[in-house]
Amino acid sequence: MEDRRSKNQYRGKSHAKDSYRKETQRSAPQGEERIGNGAVIGRNAVRELLRSGHAVDKLLVQSGEREGALVPLVAAALERGIPVIETERRKLDALAGFAPHQGVIAMAAEKEYCSIEDILAIAAERGEQPLVVVADGIADPYNLGAIIRCAEGCGAHGLILPKRHAAGLSPLVTKASAGAIEHLAIAKVPNISAAIETLKKAGLWIYAAEADGTDYHETDLNRAAAIVLGSEGEGVSELVRRKCDFVVSIPLYGKVNSLNVSAAAAILLAETAHRQRKGK
Image 1 (cartoon, rainbow, N blue to C red):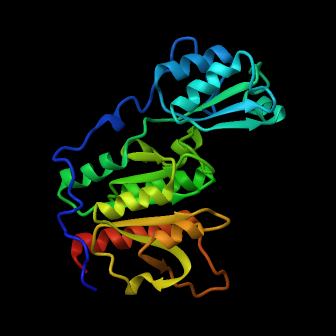
Image 2 (cartoon, rainbow, N blue to C red):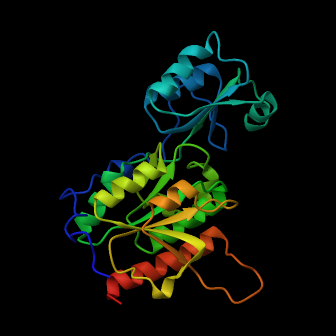
């Protein structure tokens, strides 16, 4: 099939920004109380975290407690585009290890996020066709960490996550990535569909990984590409799927009809990287 996009379209800035590499292992801001699961607990600690400008995945507020001293914290989070989620007290207690949390916990990210433009600039700097992974609602941190490891190992230029309804960059994700999180650019976006449109405008072809698509062996992967991986239970959402150019599948010959999402990621990314580099 004739490529409808110019091979030069995907080339962005001449030099990739490296801000996403900075402070990937940060010390906690002064006055911050951080739990081993990435949770920062208590009003003062959360306030300092928000003021520091460090990446925050979400703010958890006890149900019915968006009043008084919590109002400015909620406002500061919303101003930064951080999701604010009302949560039952028992869940907050468990996350805080039953230490006093005063009705608020911030889930701090393990590293700084970058932008989609930064990811595309990395590909341009390397002189390579972009290879991007889009995680559409991956909820299990171990799966996300394994996908990050696969993406980095296969030479992908970055990964895109949604802000809501998905795992963030927690310590569990870092551990599951076996250190790969330190070397992969990761963007977090409000809307996956909008992110796909941005990738299309940059010249990328979008491939959704689903069970009812075309055999990936028969699909042209030797081009600027983004691989979309869906959630563990629902797969790629219907809205996102409609935005994709192709649906690709991995043929199976046993009794099970699907693979774990991280296993599927490994197969598709390795095949795409091979074809892009070997031209096959």
